[in-house]
Image (cartoon, rainbow, N blue to C red; front, side, top):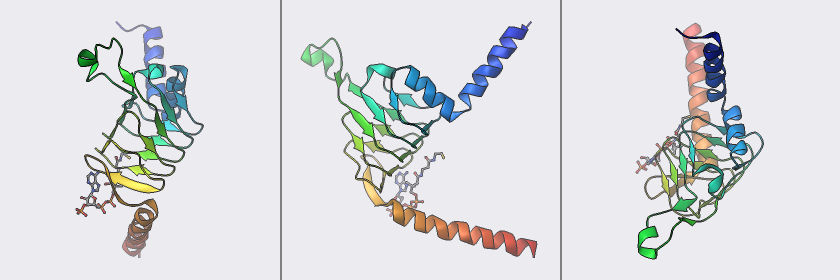
Length: 164
Ligand SMILES: CC(C)(COP(=O)(O)OP(=O)(O)OC[C@H]1O[C@@H](n2cnc3c(N)ncnc32)[C@H](O)[C@@H]1OP(=O)(O)O)[C@@H](O)C(=O)NCCC(=O)NCCS
């Protein structure tokens, strides 16, 4: 039997998990620096919460990606008890695609787009679109937007055409 308080808790839990602005607030509460207006979807992993040096700017969108501010791969060989850490910075107005992985030490420049599944090992220049493993610049955001604008205009024409 499910109690009323359990139902209420589940409703609240679902509400929070379906609101990317609320999830961004949860990450802030965990100690991650997240700018105003940034949306973080529920399947995002930001290092180990506040333990990793991660700074996310304003008005970004983070879909199901992983951002790592640490790397334990050589702890044993180096006799380290805790992992190496390097700052990851996502500047304002960036979009990070689904399944992207951003490694420690990387800076994603303002207004950039990281494609789905990209493994970002180097800094991303502002205003660029990167994709692949390792991620490379495939175009500038301006070119992508122009390409997509043509698609949007075409589909609007198709809708109007269907109605006539
Ligand atoms: C990066 C992205 C914006 C590029 O979009 P696009 O304009 O349709 O890209 P194009 O089809 O012109 O691709 C240009 C080249 O990059 C490659 N490419 C595009 N996206 C890629 C990706 N995610 N990973 C690897 N290669 C990619 C294409 O294969 C193509 O290579 P080619 O020139 O050798 O044929 C898009 O692919 C993407 O990943 N969007 C994010 C989607 C997402 O994660 N959404 C989350 C839910 S909203």
